[in-house]
Every structure is written in C-alpha cells, then in structure tokens.
Amino acid sequence: MGKRIIQQARGHGSLSYRVRRRAYMYKPAYPIKLEQEYEVVSFVTEPGHSSPMAKLRARNGTIIYNFAAKGLYVGQKITFNGKNNGDISSLGNLENGTKIFNMELRPNDGGRLIKSSGSSAVVMNNPGNNQNVIVMMPSKQEKIFEPTIRVTIGEIAGQGRLEKPILKAGKMWFIKKPRNKLWPRTSAVKMNIIDHPFGSGRGKRPKSKIAKNNSPPGAKVGHLHPRRTGRTKK
Image (cartoon, rainbow, N blue to C red; front, top):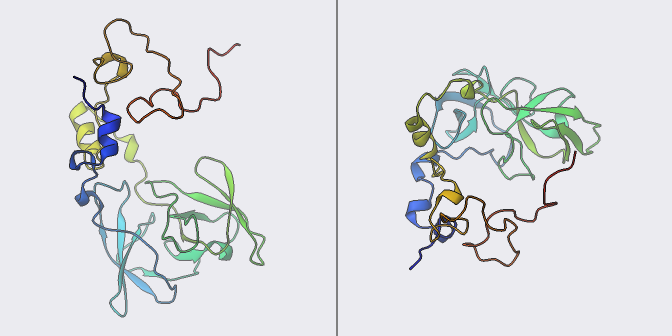
C-alpha cells in the first residue's frame, strides 16, 4: 500500500512540516503613524531571518522592530521622512539614487520586499507631485510603486553572509531546519515508486514531466505550465 508523498504531507500542514515558532519570534513592521522619534536600543537575531533586526523604542515606551541598516549603531535616532541612513520614509519623499530596503508592496502592509541580508534597491525616477516612482530592484529590474509606500533608507545589514563556505553537510541541515526546509533533497528518480510519481528502478528517465492542471497534489510534479518543451535548437 502506498503512502502520501512529501508534497501531500507538507500540504496537510502537520507539525512535522511547519515552520518553528522560535524562528520568527520578532515581527518587524512599520508603525501605523510616522510621527514619533525612535532610538535604537539593541540588535536581535533569529534563525528565520538572514539579517539582524534593530529594536527601536519611542519616548512613550512603544517598541517596534525593523531590519537594521548597514552602519546602524545603538543610540542612533530614527526619524521619519528623513534623509539619514536607517531612517524610515515614504518613497515619494526620496531623491533619485537613494538606496532603500524593507519596502512595502502596498501602503501600510509593514514591509514585504528586499529583506534579505546585504540587499538594497535604488530609486531611479521620482517625478514628485504624488506620482508613481520607478525603483530598480536587486534583480536589476525596474518596477513602479506608489509614492505613499514606506521604506528604510540605506542598505540592509548582513552583507557577506554567503561568502563564508559551508564545509560540511551537517551545517546546511541546521541552517534549513528553523525554516523547515527539507535537506538534503532526494532526487525524485532515486525514490521508490510509492514515494514519488517519478520513482522506480526500471529507468532513470522520469515519466512525462508535464503535469496536468487538474492533477492532485501528489501527482502535480514536474513541469507546471511550461512555456515550451523539448530541447532547444541552436
């Protein structure tokens, strides 16, 4: 009798395939109103995020967390709509060429883009007059955003994290574990027939890789909505 393959088990959402809560103890987000001045109290790290976070405290005792900018120090004042490194500002108030990170996708969503360590985007064209702003993303693609979304000025800390070599496989296993990523990944053709649609020992070539749109989670593997199939002709 067969069993559920990994895709089905992960979709079920049991505790074995959920992200550990300890990996995301701090939730970085922007305050609803950009009015008060905050001070950097300390820096915190957690396994779920690749970059360190700064603990910010206002005069009335309100505490928020935001990703730390490169060069940020304890005791620094964080202002809103400022021009200094680490300040939080609206995208429409920035000049062309300004580096930004932790950018919102929609106004007041708390920040969704550019949160990995060492990454940053650049404001390419800000026409002003409450018009949309063109931003060059870390992927070198230019995209258009609303001027009211909030960003953090500077470059996010943690650059050079990937330069340190991983000398043994056990270290990568511990890196993947907090985010509940399966490691090491087993090739589908190496599995048994009950574990994956591509599995069996009767041939290393998998079956048809193009999955049907109405396939169940256990069978929807391989190429999903491929643009083309076959070998490319030179």
